[in-house]
Length: 247
Image 1 (cartoon, rainbow, N blue to C red):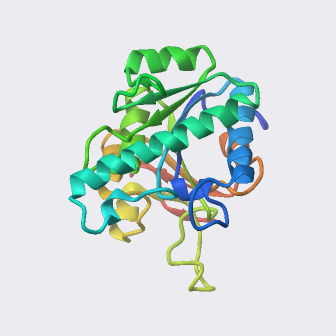
Image 2: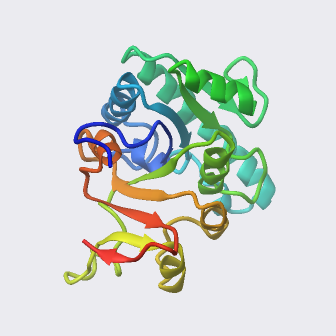
C-alpha cells in the first residue's frame, strides 16, 4: 500500500460532466468553478500524476435531448460543445502553469490536435495534461463511453468520475435520509441494484476490461488529490473478486 500522502496512481482519466462547470448557473461556464477545477487538475499534475480528462457538454447542449432534431445531428452538435468546454478548461489549466493539450475526435486543426493515441500517451509522459474533446467522434455514444474508451486506450490505471455527491448510495440520498454510501461496490452488484454509475455501454467496457472506477465529489476543494492518496470520501467500483462494502 502507498505511504500516506503519496498518489497511488501514476496515470488517471478524469471524467467531468459539463454540468460540473456550470456552478449555480442554468447555462454555460462559471468562471470561478472553471478555475477551481483547473487548479485541482494542475495541482495533481504538478506532483507527477499523468492526467487525461474527458469533459461533457451538458452545460451547453445535450444532443440526446434536442427536440425536433435527428439524433445523430444532435449528438454531433453536442460533440462540438464538448470541444468548447475542453478549450476553455485548457486555457484555465495553463494559467495554473501546467502545459495542456486538447485532442479532438472530430478534426478541427485550428483549435485542437486530432486524437492520436500514441501522441496522447507521449504528452502524458512529458507531464502535459491531455483533454479529450468531441466524445468518441461517433453519434449514439455518450461522453461516459468516451471516458471509458480513452482510459483503456491510454493505459490509465483508474477512471475518476467527478460528480456533485460523495459517492454511490444504495438509494437517492436527497430523497432518503437513511441512504447508505458504499465504500466499495462490485460491478455485478452495481448492475444488479441498477445504481446508474455510468451509462450501460461505458460501464460494460470498464467491467469487461477490469478498469476500476472511483466516484467522488468534485466540489470539495482538493478532493482529486485526496482520492489519489486514498484519503477522500468516495466509492470505488471494483472487480467481482473483491466485495461490496458500506462506508
